[in-house]
Length: 295
Length: 295
Image (tube, rainbow over all chains, first blue to last red; front, side):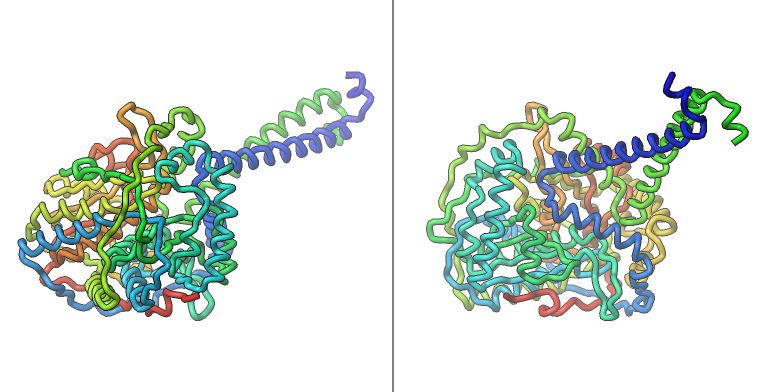
């Protein structure tokens, strides 16, 4: 009180505004860092790169709104009759059983043979993945097929370094326990050994010949669907893989492979024949009545 | 100045704090509503339900951390040899070409015949989707197969009502333009006509017999991969579908179909034979060199 009465009212008013401003600023910083922390602890399995991506793309559409292309010129696309082959009920049942049996033999395999695989087969498998549907037919995928031994080894170094940190720090005990039964850890020999590594990038937006940006609706879901078809195509030719999502390696691998800024790594699939001593965990799949509900 | 000098310094100080507090509060409200708005305008194609989901699950893992199951009991799963069929290089090439040709004939079809389809075929197609890999083998999918005419019609009503709002308000001119070339709008006759609607739910977490929760790592990517295999299985038997992601209908459809809180609608696929007068837009797919990079 003694202090206050010795000050002029105007000075007190200014002081209050300054104190109030500083207080508000520190509050805001606290809120932000709390938010960041809670985001990270809440979903440790979400790749930091994937998190970044969301921010980047929302920034784009806010700031560069006029940059997004208007595709009115395509609206008058011709529509053509579609009359695909039709099978009898018996044939359908047979085909559905055969395809199920084939796909049901697929397993995620971490022991891959170094034996070379014809590149033409890989080409056809990628072509097949490219037949997937995508939001507004944007085809937002890039498949980088690596067979060069040096590049494969660099990929392995990047991934093992990050994966060791993931296992020891980022993932938490429960996740590591959940993976223990699959005997996975951060040593990924298959990255050197497999004749091909397929790195699947999602294009978070497209770039048109004019340099303008094009929205890629549902790009992550579209690329994942495409990977499903890729897995089916690999299984169909007797090749094996394991579906991996290298946590936090995206930016380094993108830079190593010189991919543009609109591409984010979604999955990495080492591909080859299974090693002769390949083993898989004795997992069972859920029964039909556990995954299907009929209404 | 005249006003200030007639007040006591203490009163001015209190007044400043009150004004500062009110100012801060209104600022915060502004920031929040700006944030909400920017989230919505930034990614209008992200389903509100999917957005909710993220918040719900991050809340769960923060607050109910001890509830998540520790699966140590499964860690000693046996590992068994894996020796699948291997094909000669010639056979592989032939198989890869044949499968590519078959998948390349797949198109998203919005004109579906009401002709009945054997349920056993649908069962096998769902079984096949269930062979997909999933994060830590959590199999986080539920396929709800609807053939009941009343339920199909209720689904249509829910979707058409929301889709009309999506097209007129939520999606924005550019997206609607992007879809114009595909001649899609909010009238979805196929929801009544198709013999089956497959609603694909992702389980954002699992529930164990003990009632405890189980983390479902990468559940959206896993379920999307499974949908890719589902599309391949449908194409293999000569059935058609269109991959749809009904925006903002998730909660209503979940409630209609009485699915539990951990399940979120990811996709809806109307399934049947193509209508005899089915048409598709004359789209081209990208060439191999546009989607594949070899290193």
